[in-house]
Structure formats: structure tokens, C-alpha cells
Length: 348
Ligand SMILES: [Zn+2]
Image (cartoon, rainbow, N blue to C red):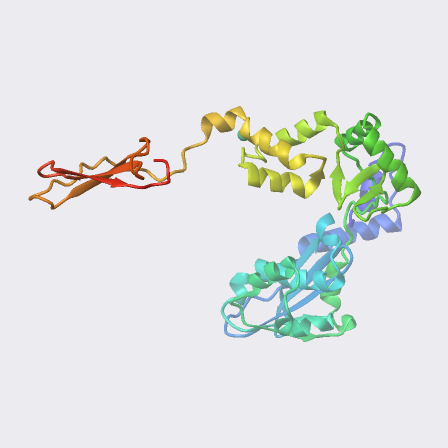
């Protein structure tokens, strides 16, 4: 900026003339090269004061002690942070300052001067957005006081925040993209007479039966994209939400939930179940989730007679005097057996 008139002289087809503008630029450059702005050295026995300000394009701050500046901070805002509200930008300025000058600030109490009155009550405010919560965690563990200061008294920080950003060109345009598969769905409706009928109904009376709606030529069933009888797309979607990394070959309930969240078509649940059950990868790779059965144990050995008996039924016998089954009780020690005729309605 300072050397601009001088740089212009070096251009093609420009006469090298020394004008007043170039002379003053040369002088200004000389002074700024030979002198340095006087900054105070920090004294850790005294409290620090910070002035912050934010404007549309950037945030600025001054670290001070007894009115002497110690350090300056000026930062242009990126496209993401530019969209924040003024309050959030002011808050962002404080968070940035704390990050930058934490080594100075963490030893004692410091004061933050801001021209955003709401921030004075920062500590009592509820944290509504995730952004606020994240910012708040950065301030934890520091002792600070926030006071309000009128914008005009805050000139240093104000100027720093308004430092021009180099490429401040604006592009005011909105581009809307529509995924290709949505067009494919619309195309699929053409070969589906039932959905065609539905569309004609919806075109006449939107939200006819309360479940189907029509937006941008896409039928939605309770807000989910309706595929109709487009089997090719149904298969594609089931593959996309089961066979891919997103689907992770989940079981039927998880896959169904995932698809149900976004899409709908007739007979969906049954089809998904079939797809999951016939998935080759699932069949080959799913582990057996049953508990490990452990080693086989021999039956305990009896030490005397009738210590241990075994019971069994002999069934499937023809009826004989009202009985059709024999209960066999065997003593495992002596192998002595009792046979009891019983009446028994159940099969083994
Ligand atoms: Zn699978």
C-alpha cells in the first residue's frame, strides 16, 4: 500500500517522473523502515487488558497494560465465519485472542473490553449452539472480566478489525444442484402406471390422502422419497445402503431403518429382508454370535447305589391298557432299571 505510487512508476509506458505523491510515499517508506512502533514489554505482576472488536470482514484486538500496547492482532474472517452474527463474531474475537495470547493471560485475571453489550453477561448465558459450547470450553480455566466499552472509545481494535482484506470480491449467486439419481427416480415414474396415477391425483389436489406429497416432480411418502415399482433403483438403493462401506453389511433391522429413513416403495420391508438374507458376503462372513459352548464334560460318576439316576421315556408305543409310554429309571451305579407304564399325550 505504502509503496504503491513507486511501484506504479515501474510499469510499462509510464514516464519515470518524481511527483509529490511519489516523494511522500518514499519518505513514508523511509520512516517506517527506520523506526519501529514502540510496544511495551509485558509485566506479569500487572493485569492485562484486551480490547477487541469485530466487523464484517475481520476481527482485531490489542493487548495492553496500563494503556500501553503490548501486541496487536488482526485477522480476516474466512467464508465460514463471515456468516456468523455480530454477537458471535465479537465472541470469536475474544476466543481468538485467548488462543493467541494464552501464555500472557493464564496467570492472572485480565479484562476484556468489547463494544458488544451482550457479551458482558457471557458467563450467565446459556449455551445454545454447539459453536458456543466449543468456544466456551476454550475460555475455561481463565479468569476474565468482560466490560462494555463504546465503539468510538475502542478505536485501536476497531481499526484493526477493519483492515482491508485483499481479495474482497463478492460473488452473489446461488447454485442449486440436483443429484442425478433424483432425475432417475423421476424417469422411473414414467414406466410405473400406479405412480403415474398418483402424480395426476397429486397434481390436481396436493396432499390428497395426507401421506403423499409432490415436490419438484418427486413423490414423497410421509416425507420420504417414493420409488414406486422401479425395481432397478430399489436394488441400487438396497445395495448402496447395505453392501457399501456406509451400509457395512448390517443386519436386517439396521439396514431397514437406514432405508426407511429416506425411501419408501411398496413391499419394501419384505424386499430388504430378502436382500439381506440372500447377501452372499453376509452369509460367508457373519460370525456365529452364540456364546462359546466350552469343553464337553463327562457325567459325574456315582459313588453308591441310587446316588444318581437317569430318566427317559420310551414313546411311540401302541396303546395297552390305557398306557402308551414307558418311563425308564436307571440307577447309573448298578444299572438297575425300573420300567413304569405311564399315560402321556405328548410326543418325545
Ligand atoms: Zn450383506
